[in-house]
Amino acid sequence: MSVGVLSCTRCQAPLDRPNLYNTADPVSCPGCGALLQAELFPAAFREESPGPQAENVLVEGESSCFYHPNKKAVIPCEACGRFLCALCDLELRGQHLCPACLERGQQKRALKHLENYRVRYDNLALLVALAPLLAWPFTLLTAPATVFLAVRHWNSPTSYVRPTRVRLVLAIILGVLQMAGWMMGLSYAFRN
Amino acid sequence: MPESGPEYRRLPGRGLRRIGRIPLARTSSRLYLGPDHLLSIDSSGYAEQYRRFYYADIQAILIRKTDLGRTWNFVWSALALVSGLLALGVGFAAAIVFASVSAASVLSLLINLARGPTCQAHLRTAVHLEEMPSVNRLPIARKVLAAVKPRIEEAQGVLAPEVLAERLAQGATGAAVASPERAGKSVPWAVPSRVPTVTSSYAGGWHRGLFALLLVDGAETALLLFIQHVSVMLLSSLLTGILSIVAILAVIRQQGSALSRLAKGIAWATLGYLGSNFVLGNVVLVVLSAQEPGIASDQWRYLQLLAEMDPFETPWYLGLLGYSIVTSTCLGLTGLLALRYGQNKGSLAGPAPPASTLPMNRTSP
Image (cartoon, rainbow over all chains, first blue to last red; front, top):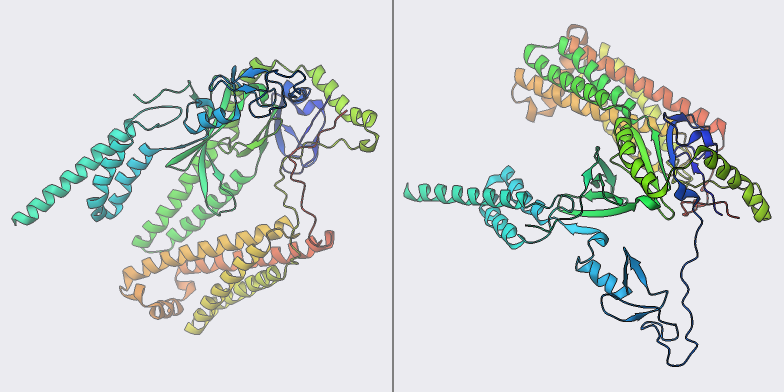
């Protein structure tokens, strides 16, 4: 069984006394005296289980893994149906997938809980609408760009935690107002 | 409607996470409480990165109080005091400027005090050590811990104190029984240390020069009290320029060196002092421009004007010079002492072998 103790992030002194953990109030580090609050959970003492091992195909004609022809297939991929050995079987929240489908699912954002990067086009549109106000002549170009960006990415994912189109709407309103301002200004200038 | 994700609750706190080695490049980091995981979102404005820490996998959370808040308290207090004193000895227009700076500093100090002491938080999994930049104040840390701990305990169960004591004791003795070659080598998890490893053989030459120049600067500024001549002002400007260059070089060279923390801190403090001099100099320029328009574009006339002023008849100027003399002398003396005693306590070691990149070493049966 593997056991680990934490060490102080300042002086690296090992925190190997039980009275340093899971305390109601901060305690002093035995090394440098810094105030610490350390919470240790059962996972720290969990036994490491060995990873899955694929069995070799023993009987001719037995189903084998699509990616490892000499390994026994144990389960099909739930996305593409390919047979998978124990090594290739990637279980994710009860779903069994092959590596290719997992990667594809992540790239196409079909597997929401694997998504780790997102471009925020709503923030970008709002930025394009607001930033040029510091140098307002640029709004002649950025105002239509703002509206185009907001409309083009109307269906693109927004915030992961609070999906809303408020910023896109705001960007469109600002862009339209800026364009209207330019049209009024230019028409006034041409008339005079 | 955009697709709706799982329900998340935003946790208090917002921090900046450094991006690689690019100075000043940061992303804004926030934490969210999810149904079965903790979500960390790093936002650069136009893009977001997500990291998930499942409650069943979180092994430990470590929160350590830091001195950063106290340092900022000192900075804001010093700025408020200096600006306030300067505001007392100048004309009305200048007093408004200095008083505004002082008021802003006091406000920043009050905000810093109200936010509570600063801290640093780390989250540990079996393969992962993650700093949580958004948990940067103790009150926030308490709230985050109060929110996250029940979820973790729901996923993993509660670690009873007697079980914890038994497992820690087993960890200390287990290695000796099962692995004689590791006897007595119960290695703790090596959390990435803020104590830098020595990778440079730099012995502090630039620092010695910097601290000596600070003493010279203090003496030269004291000379300004008694000799009002433009040549002394020119010398002062030249010295400030040289000081700035040496300070920057010293701060660059001290990275990865074996110099004491105090010596390194004083080098940084010198940069801060030079920065404050720069700001105050510009404020003085603005004030003098009100009296004599045109000097803003005529540096020579500006120096002449300063040289003609008698500090003992101009309280704000006396205050500025006093601040300069005291600060540069203190920094120079303290720096030289720090270098001397830092060397005496231990030799300035040469480059050490790089630290292990493994974030954790466990005792194993």
